[in-house]
Length: 558
Image 1 (cartoon, helix red, strand yellow):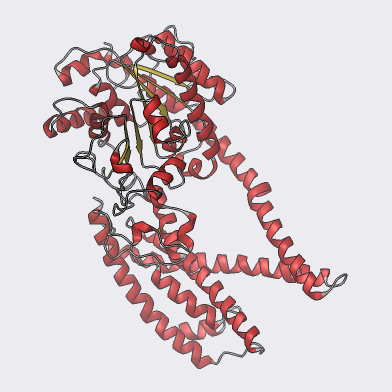
Image 2 (cartoon, rainbow, N blue to C red):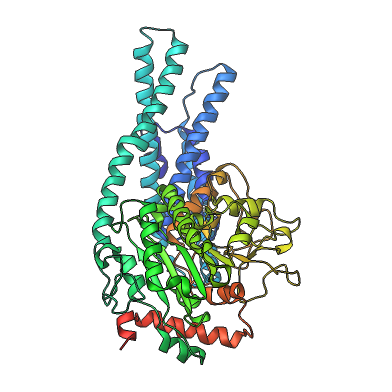
């Protein structure tokens, strides 16, 4: 039945079908995270479409060299293909289920029910047909344009000019007219969401929060994530209860997109509100570059405040309405501008204070926030000269400083946990509760720490995966990545592309989920004396309970 249907297919070529089958089967190999059936179908369909295109291209090149035309494919060839395709796909599905269940166990997820596998091939078929059909439409447009141009110029020139024209029109359509229309609609949709307020979040009644009494930043201008940030968090009483020592009320300052017209103005307003609240009089000052929607990672902010006894001020500002999954692709420049503007504004005020009256200055950024946080610095010595420490978690692969540190790591250290210049300033860790490598080497200057997971697709995704094997797939795999994970041209790129939307699904310590790990990371950076695993466990439990209860500043003040 399959062979008869395929023989009546709308013009599919057998060479392309064979390479499509090979690519589809390879797509079932493991990557960083377990893929649900729909995502596996997507990867299989896209990989098959790419394989089909490569097969058709290869057959055309061969015919050109052999100087012969297209030969009619015998029905028996299609029957053999149909039989082998059925066998190969069944084996690939079985192995895929086994690999995905093993990967789920490594990252703390419950494996998907095997029955869900029945969705994979239908989903793959839909993506394959749509993508091949789209490619054929483009090819038909090219041929039509080349024939029209051939009326006024030579055939070779017409083909060349037609190809260039089609490529340019496609780029302009996707990146210009269509891209702008889509992004305009998406931005409008999320700007409406940004105007809402999460349940349980109420305006602060203390002057040490933006939007509270005396604040220079209106409550309504903070955005959804900004209102949640300033309204939540521990107060002095709760910190004292957890630490057994006297504490202060932490200061939280924030400006939203509606607080001022541009990044520099929002940064200047944040600094004025920080000064108004007494932030420069605290012992510790943390500058945060947010993620896409303006989100400040709550376990990081809480950990910093508990470990400093509340003698701290945290300042952040929003640069986008879009969630990180979209900002990751389209808001890099805004993240760069926001990170530099906020740090520069804070640093200008801070550097003009008497040296013995300056708070210790720290920087934090997670995911795209780490990209923005890095942009204020030119290198490791610039960081060491201007801050007491920095924490960057889940850095994207395109972070300039991060890539420089990793690419120039010490010989013998792996990409998933590199050592840079013997760890004199910048260090990397996969598990912050363990001693930070290189163990035993001096770390006397500012502590700059990158926290990354071997199973985090946000960190390891890169367009270079299409044709280049990365070091992390040549070196021993990380603790939560299957040893059978391999690099496959084209396929690995789409596997990690499908992994990215799933990056927050694994449990803490895996994927892009760093919840709770900030406690040990900040304890390392702040050089907390007498730090023990027991203290870490107790503080993690306290923060976890606070976040689960959704404590707000108003509630804690009662």
